[in-house]
Length: 425
Image: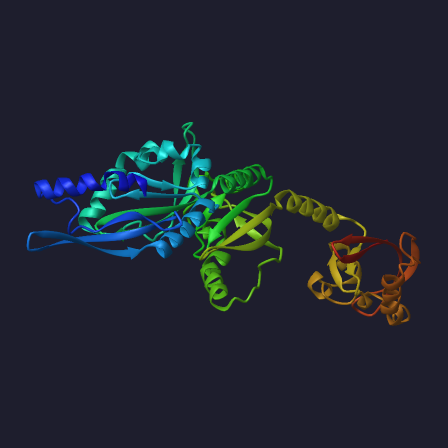
């Protein structure tokens, strides 16, 4: 091509006159010109021979067209890649950046190529980068090559953002190059901040543990309920929040699940007892979920403090227990769930003799024989015949004697369960 052709005669003349070798014995890349005027890449190695008084130069060329096409193809891949890519020398000087890199860091390509890669780093990384490079070149000990890791990047306006870097090394002849492929984590970071804001502001206590039961995260509601600072919980085994009867077996529960994969409590809400920092216990309702992040398994528990409900239940139970009239509660199968002291006294039973029994135990045969069908008909049809209507009946005491009573019956639904409460006089 013209840029070489215009100077070639003077190169030859200078060498023949001075004998100073500049390209002889040294291979180098050049451009060749075909008969149709098109150009292509080639690799030229040049040698000299003398025959008599004549000097001859022999050039052995290697056509680099295929390699050039492959390079162009690779460059188009790099240029069009969605993820930022940057290549540096062993001295940290940027050789190549793609369009995505320029966009993310808010630079033009010519503002980056030729600069030290430290321009893309916040001070805490930039200050040590040259020494990291020098240490690797000197020792050959790999610390970050081939290992992905999270870092901070620095844009042209000075703002920083989160990124994930994977770093590789290439040796071309005597030169060493390092290529970094980056993933901009800004969107993920914003989403994490949004989720953290939700967790932080949640009314219900939330705790997250790893597969060894070590607390990774707690929200303020959790700290408030259990009476800890977050620094007193994160890094501790979650057993710190449990009474001894649960704490003693929790590690084995975790190990068993991770070994077998059999789910017993995941996705199922249940009532438990929690242990505050001062050692006091309280009722809570726990729902547990699992998340897998890369090779890690995390468990997140969302709790509801049942202290107020428990106190209300105790208050209601004290009212029921101290009521003068007998009270009995049954489920939709007719099984007694609760009786008060007055009921036990009137029917001459202990509460342990009644709870869990069919309520028919308190009826004479003419009522007992039909009670199950009455219940089944109501549950099936929803037609009320005695609910909300007081009526006179006969009751049967533990000694087999009968007595007259007045029954008023009410219904309550808790979740999917139906309960019937009878107040007797």
